[in-house]
Length: 310
Length: 307
Image 1 (spheres, chains in turn brown, red):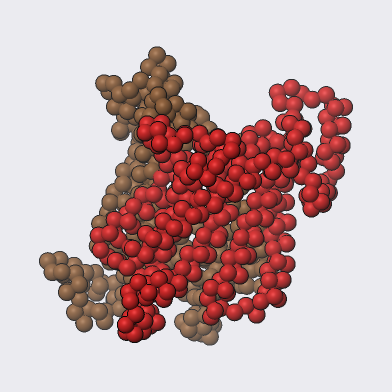
Image 2 (cartoon, rainbow over the protein chains, first blue to last red; image 1 turned 90 degrees about the vertical axis):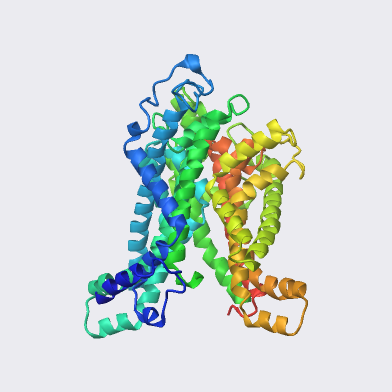
């Protein structure tokens, strides 16, 4: 694509100049694809760099928590129960005498894994089912719309508590599976709408007139143009899924020990908040910062991909 | 309008049946209510069979469901395993949760709209950026974290309010729990109002109002705000159901014996009649709230007419 190379060359030029002043009429005429445009927009946002760095850091410590701490989250000494910070243990100890710092570091894994896998599952399942419903219409669309109506009738936290309390899983797989089950209709609705809009565009009609097959129209023409709204919703929801997982774990139906999870630690610390607030504040802070990082990224991606808001 | 309402009501029926059946299957088919009744001990087979017959559990699942629903529409929600009628539990729990939800909605509507107007009119200024960052932070803190932290600060450290709500649960006692419940929605209302206001400031009717020489106050309140509130009202309407579901966390933190609390206890003890009864009512509230929001749309925006 010639326009890609053009725009990247142009993008590098106005480094010393003010960004707005640098746009001359000729540059404005260079056609840029939606993705190029979004990327260009993202690169000028400090919030994008801050959140990306935070997320990168979180992914690294979820993969290799031992980089940050040599203490095991399971090495507990009841004699040190609820003690404050000590040498080598900057966050103090919890009720079981486990190192709060180690547990906070190791807790990142569960949250990040649940967030990313749920988002992937919801995005894939939702966009495939919703996209096909929008493309083919007919009875498949009718059935799918009614099914998603039913799932919408159940508030997600309520459904989660009821279903997970019966299933009694407690592993990351179970929690992700449930969240995908209750989360896909939202993405399916958005994907369906986006596909229906894209289907009516002239270039798709032209492709159809030229004799393109259904699969070619879907893959080459519709998908690239209907993907943006799905990506926006998926990134914004990532943070909300992490928050939901922690809430379910806090209520005792989400993740269960021995999985180290911020939700479980906060739940256990909540009864002792008067005596030892540090047990609650560290995992709670880590959880909030993680959710914030993903929500900030989602916000930046939305601003970049949704030109209407500019 | 009348035909639209009837069509929507008819559409609600399959959704209601589907959602409640899903919950019913989860609670009665995947869990074993009779085993739960006996706890750790294995039940005597004859007794278990008798209980099954009494509770209508010896029939196929779909018959159990229709039987249960028929009972519900006659006002009989069954008996909780503690021997207390579920209806009695509801009578004590619902007023508390309704009061809590009212407090939460007032908080999110009043504060959210005011913040939204301020930021929407000063788009791009430091107040706007500050409030926007603040809303992001508020959205990121899960309710159970903000609940405990605010309870600790206001209830324990500064002693401004009682950390635990008394059984009477008057409105002033519910102020702090209401704020906690509303926080996340408050941030959404702020953002929604801001976007809506900022969009409408460029509208022709606002320019006309300014050109006519109307005072700024009147332009903002009568012309700008009224039109900008349409999406906000619909958000708050759909939020009612979410708030009542979210009360499960808030009520646990502040020890309020409302719907969320009873539901959570029912789930923990596998008290199936309680769980299914409360969830059924919540689903109805959720669906009716959504319907009302759709109808409200037409009232607020005369350009929309339902055939």
